[in-house]
Length: 588
Image 1: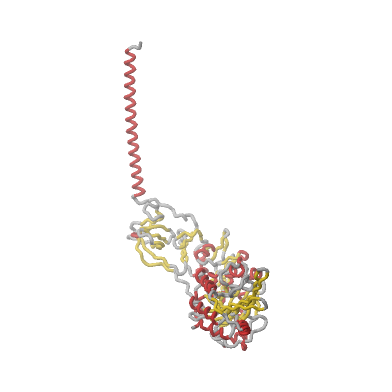
Image 2 (image 1 turned 90 degrees about the horizontal axis):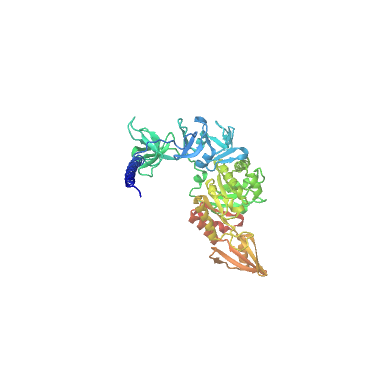
């Protein structure tokens, strides 16, 4: 049996231990409550500092540490200039992206080719010797190559393109504005020696400060879409957001547009439709005395010139007497240059500036020698990979020809998936560097076509014109509709259930003779918009979609409905006299 005293002692210890435990729990609860209070106070302070009070922390711009970063429209371009002051150089990729995407660099010769409507500038790395419109020019600074990037002299390019560059000596920032560009200006409010205004990294007072702007600081306002904030740039290059109420708007900074010199096409042909015919010249010289009347024709384009070798040399079949006759008739003469329709030759002959310039210079010399009024380019059968060289040839020809007051036109096919005849043509770019594009809207069904059909049905022609106008943004007044003065006699024979098709091209007169000889009466084919006839001869079915006054009038009306720059007919020798009477309606 346990003594009573021991039992009482155990009870007393239990009571003491329980009280101690209760005191410890109360103590811990108080500590927790105090810690929780501190957390709430800290959170409230954080919320006040970061969500109520303006942020006073400063941050460096993301271009800090870069040497001479270039800005365009208030945005960091990612490119840097080289040199300073009069020795400032700009990187070629920057210029290609923001000034002129067509600037050409040729790796083999380390050369740069820049062209405008009036000027063609050729430069090479590490030499001050250059040329302007193929005339020697001495540069003050030579282009340089640094770390795989070509840099070009800023002063030379400012003169060529009319852009403006400002360099900040303190930060090294370079601000570029293109010709014709304007930007609104503003001033930071406040008195002199007054409170600065923060330029922030984002459109909120809680964003870090990029720079403190003193009262009177002039800024460029690049974006004012937000009612409360403006995106601005200081002359130092620092960009960011400032409260709209802290800026006094007023004035603008403008870079004058480069003065435009009207081309002869704009001076001589504006509002006057072109009515051209091509003169197909082979070995024998055409005799204008046998042509008869050509009412309404105001341009003739003889096929006199062709590039004949890989060095760009040009062969001529030109005839001074023909030019003299045309001028007496009130016609301009646009001599036609081909690539001999030789794809491999074209690859070589257009592969470098020197070869292209060889062909261009020779054509300009022929133009002087024979008194030509323009040059018509007809490059066909070209690899798609050489399309850029074709466009570059035209970029280089245009300013050189314009300096001699010559019209520059180019023949293009309707758009199709044909590599050699269509895909190489950049019609958008070509429309920008020529006075006229002539769309050869024929050969819808060509010589070896697997099926018989019209050379140029009216719906197909309309679609061909529409696509170039709409998809390539070629101005209607620059586009000339090419019209066929020939047709094809299709022959169909059937053997073992299979139809064999062949054709031959014939003149308008040849078709008239067939109709008269066989006493055939054409009927209007509504699908093609042309008169149509078929007959059997020696067991062979013949089909003809006829070119006559009906089809020619429809083509003229189509050109007028689109507001095109005129018409061009292939070719004179295929026509009958009444064709010219119909075609002259282009001017009515």
